[in-house]
Image (cartoon, rainbow, N blue to C red; front, side):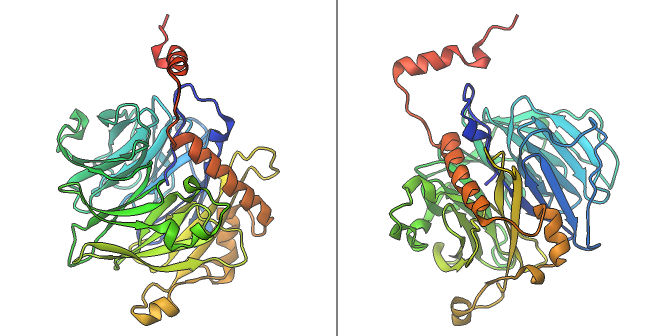
Length: 432
């Protein structure tokens, strides 16, 4: 998931823990991993690590990165997070062509399908838009400022997505809502036409993705949630088409040690040229592959791909239009009392072209490290090393569970406690 910042007034130190993120170039030219404030990029075509150039303020990110995203055409890359900076990069030179300031910490980003607009959400529930129309390679966008696009009214926004045809802009939040908004012709003037609300989740919505094929280009929306379900939607009407309880299907109910809130779906990634959706679930060492029957408008578990022998619970997933590879990362930053505050581990799954009984019996497999494109050289760059203590990643997984719960599970306060918190809110203080 693209994680969120903390609420106004919250100071719980666990909320500082941030998950490792991964993003893949649309044609798999490069792969990016963010862990903490560190942004790592590897050039798959050139077979070398990328050196980022940022002349905007003399430094890269200063705090945990919470969202990364390639544009659909691969020319732009965006990173943003707790330092309230949204950095827009050219993927040709990997220079930061614009650094936009946010009023609050940033929790999610998206790029319009034509690459003309960058949208980002802050922890206060406001979505902002930046005009980058006309970018043709490597020119800088100086003094770019964001304009408000829409608001979820004080609810942390967890995910942003454009529909496959670019007509709609989707935003999900901590209050279990998915808002479908008509993306306006003049976004800088705001988005005022709501197409629908997709309501049905009982906990925070953590991630969004679209399943579409050549026969069904408009596709259907799938969403993951803290309620341990993946749901299928028709966004034009907001209708719930099907629900799949992944916690039950993955066998996590068999473990008495796993609490309900620790089976949250943390990320979704659609497999190109198929109706498969990969889901990352807390406490599951592997992924769940769901299949969407677009004609019947149903969703079901096709296979659970387990990762044997490693403490690998994916925190983020990524793929490209031109490859059958699914990239995964696990890890976290700002782990307290850890000698390795910002480590990550990358794995890749291949073999999605199989169909029928062969898919279920053999199906996708987890590649060995030396089978991953560019092998050890890539892993050394994206992971920060090639060998780690597995206990680190178990500790990271537990810390992320607590962090997500503190951030996104709604808290119940007494009337007296609510009044006390209101008095201490920064936005209520009188500015001198």
